[in-house]
Length: 404
Ligand SMILES: [Zn+2]
Ligand SMILES: [Zn+2]
Ligand SMILES: [Zn+2]
Image (cartoon, rainbow, N blue to C red):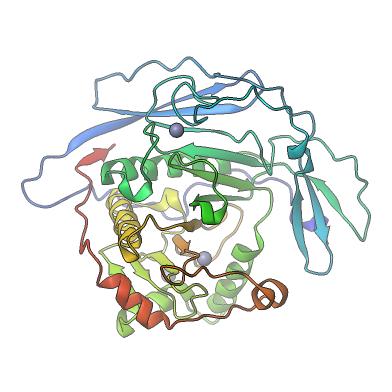
């Protein structure tokens, strides 16, 4: 039943496997600039949070962050609600109030640029509570009564927007590796923070890129959903890994070993990560990026070397995507990390779902995919993996900074 999906909140767990502090190397003779991450969390007048992340060499102090507001709308009076689908056994997030929310005065300026509607002045990396969220911290009980057939819950959780850079143009692939590396630190910190919110059970960072995915803001940014339940796809993966664990194996270790052995679906491999077009890919250019180390189950588990490696591998994959058909390649990029409330043999991984199957053709989720839940693949993963593997760049250097 729906009610069982919202257990009493658990204390924020310490990382399951303490990552060894292996330091960070980029080869002989390369001098690294040490940086310290500074974080300032402020509250906007409408009650939403905004967190600034600044990076500065030790001993240097970044600019003081005191402004939380640019243009502020009214606080949300009504939160989203969760409605239980008894046939599928899953929640639908109903955020109908998004339609009624008072609009801000019209602005021609991008809301994610410094001085736009959301961020008052210059910044490095910023996260803030989404103005149009699917979940709200401490959302009130919905008006709709909950019944045995149709359980209803308040949509309590957090939805954040994560702005990668103050530069309006460009994309994730065009960010310097150093900036992606800083982002890895921010994703990790947001994961820790949001896992500590009592109603949160699963922190899910993602990026929708491109008009084809419905993105209306071009400014490089991603989002984080902190779910009050384990979302169905992750729950299903968890179920499978737990079953495998009972047989004494880790599914992720098995997949990594098999992919390294077959090698035909490998797109990129490094000391700590493996990128493949999965054997069972549902999109022609789908790529999954797995942490290779057993025990590296969520972002806070990553060692310093693994963080640097993740940054350069993400850069490599997205840069090759842009090369593939010669245009900025749209995708959904999602992170599957072990929910704080769960325990299983799990490897942190990133999944990319690009909608293009060729330079002109999009893959639509039509009747078989949407209505039956089965995907038809128009290509062999071995072929698309080779195409991606053969593209430039062949490699990306590790970031030339080290965040301590
Ligand atoms: Zn902008
Ligand atoms: Zn494993
Ligand atoms: Zn997954």
